[in-house]
Amino acid sequence: MVQDWQKVVDDTKDVDLIILDDADLGFRDHSELWPAALQEKSKNHPWILLKMACPLAQGPLWDHLHKNFSDRLIVVATVDDLRLSEVQISQTLSWERTAQDVFWELVHNPCINSVSHCAM
Image 1 (cartoon, rainbow, N blue to C red):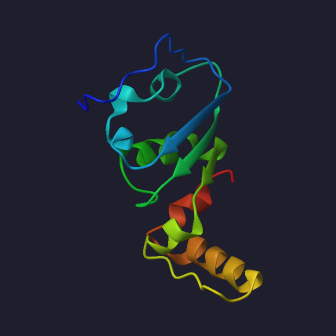
Image 2: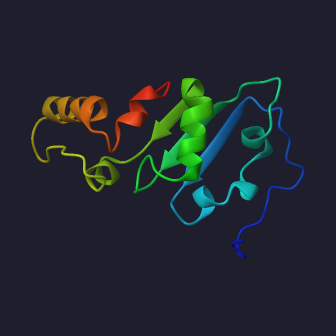
């Protein structure tokens, strides 16, 4: 157990939105610290806004969210973190080319293409 982390007080499983900032500081590996709405079945199927840091689309938290919540999962990541994840995205070219690179990688690169299964 990571001693610097604390579980949310008065956590409830019935929420409409969960916002997670996964900076790869240990939270993604400790399911006992995740919100109750991620761990227990609830009447609501919450939307999840996940800000990820490198390594992207990896670890127990990602596996759980991808398997159980991908239809209501919104992922936010920086292009620099994408580039650090074995993703080939052009730099200093046009925005159009960068967008094409991101699209191609999300569809074809097995290191990151599970992100394309998310709602957004």
